[in-house]
Length: 190
Image (cartoon, rainbow, N blue to C red):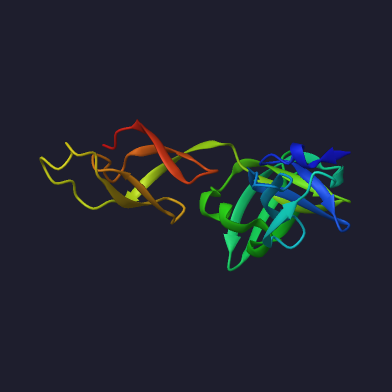
C-alpha cells in the first residue's frame, strides 16, 4: 500500500480502479489543520491531468505496471506507429491523446519504453536526455550574448525550443524531455 507521503512525481497508483501517475506534488500545512498533499495526477488510460488533495488517512494500491522496449517508427495524423524491437513486422499504434506532450520528442527508429497496465499500453517513457538537430534558427546578433539571452529554434521533430543565442541551424543539441529545456550543445553544425 502507498500512503500520501509516497506520492512523489513518477509514482503510479490505483485510484477509483484507474492507474494514475503523479505529475506534481507539494506538501501544505495550514494553521490549525492537518497537513495535505496537493498533487496533479495523470490518468494513464485517458491522459487527463487533474488536481487532487490527499489527507494523511488516504492510502492507495500500487499499480502493477509492466515495461517493455519498442521502437518508434513514424507519426501520421494523430496516430503514432511503433514496432517490437525483435520483430519489426509486429506493429501497433498509439493515439496522440494517449501519449500527450512527449510526441514533440519522438524521433523515427528511436527505442522507447512503453508502460502496460492490464495488458493495455497506457504511456511511453523517453530517455531523460535526447539529442536533436536544429533545423531552423534565427541568426545570432554579434554582441548580444553577454546577457545570456534566449531565442526559439525548431528541432528535427518540429518542436520549438528555447536555447541560448549562440545556437545555430545545423547544431546538435541535448534536451531534457521531461522539462522540455535545452541542456547543452553536443556538436556544432557545419
